[in-house]
Length: 124
View 1 (spheres, rainbow, N blue to C red):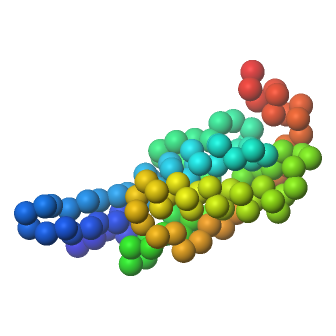
View 2: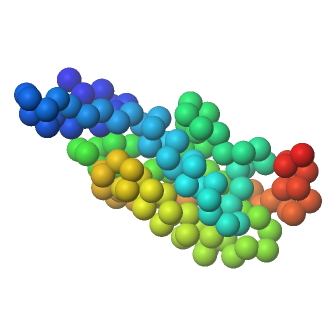
C-alpha cells in the first residue's frame, strides 16, 4: 500500500519501483525558492532543507500529481506579484524536472516584507 507521504511508481516485476517522499519534493521547492531573486525566508534565515522545509513548504500528492504551498517573504522594492509568479514557475519547473511528476499548482503565501537592512543582518 502506498503511504500518503510518498509517490511510488511500479515499473514492473523485473525493474522494481521508485519512491519519492514528500520531504524530497519539499526540499526541491525550498532550494528552488532560494534561487528566485526578491524572495527571502519568512524569518530571515536560509531556506531550510529536508525536515526543516516542511515548516515552509506543504506538499500534497494525489494520484501521481503534486500541489505545493510555500510561505515566503519578499524583499522590499521587488514587485510582489512578479516575484511570486517567478517563484511559482521556478518551483514547478524544478519539481517536474527532478521528479518527472506533474505539478498541478504552486500556492505562494507572502507572509512578510523584508527590508534590505534585515536581509544584510541575516547574512552575518
